[in-house]
Image (cartoon, rainbow, N blue to C red; front, side, top):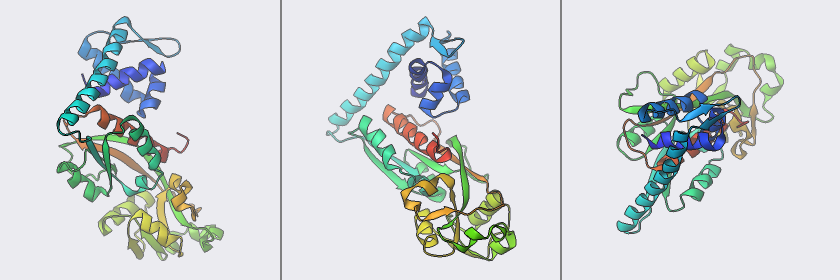
Length: 303
């Protein structure tokens, strides 16, 4: 029995349906259903009963619910007691988050977490994939949020959860000449001659990004940098960049706008990765929940 299973049971009980519980947990309905099914298999009895509208706990489910809530409270209390015995130092959590996620109003996520765990010291590292994996494997961070792992990366030691797909688009400064020329903005050959500012670790990553997202050849003139630097460059020049569409609503991108184009821009999958088999405290589970919720707002601004 895992903490994740207990959190799923509590969410189902409080929400009254698998769908509503999945929205609370920011997981798919299939994932929550599987978690409950696995818990039922482990316990050996049905825990939920399906109704014409929603679900309710069985008698056995109600019994487990009481103990699940008590168990989570006891785990929190035990962790706090151990920390006090070690010198009253607060517990610490750390994660690595891809830069585009950091730019999307992450302060609210920190507020959600600190309200529930005010004594936990939290470190969030702004890191691309090339930084995130060493951080994770060297126990510098507890988990990482990254753009989808490339196929060549070894993942045998990792637990990977897909959060969602981020819709990306061409972005330029407001007042850019191409905003009034849809034909040129849709001409692949013309765009290849433009200046681009791309967020990537290296030229190989750029090539992959253009192949997967844009399906055309890499432009001639490229500047590699972080999203924050890309935003600063693009808003002061005629360069073009590729950013999550939802990010254009953020204050940090107030001077940028989407460039309309007939070229279809793809999606970037966001994933949350941890070391396989690593135990999770309730505080860590809740931090991952908060970060998942934050990322889903980037994937779907209506969330």
